[in-house]
Image 1: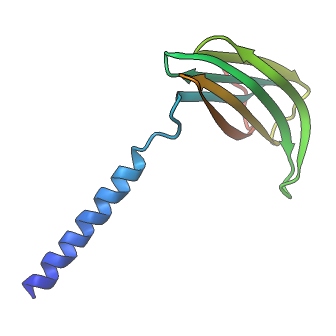
Image 2 (image 1 turned 45 degrees about the vertical axis):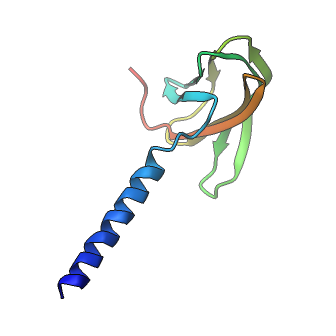
Length: 137
């Protein structure tokens, strides 16, 4: 009986450690963090994307940004896009206001970009979907 209990505890410990190890794995190699805002403000969409690469990254380019309205069926309608943006720096910061969006609808902001560091190009992407329930303050 004690052996079964020890084996159970040992297996639980291994599972917990493997989940913890996977949870702390970085998402990207050249990129520290991405921050995205997709918010409603009195009929306007307030959009922001910040890419923070490692400090020795020298360029973030091929940044393509898309903004969609998402129907309840899941169908996406492209509202606006911005293509081939770039910076010769380790921080990319972009903001935009898109007029004529509607409360209680769902909108999706997404991007992809190439981060250059030490001769290695890392392609990253992310998305943020928001239901516009209330205005930002």
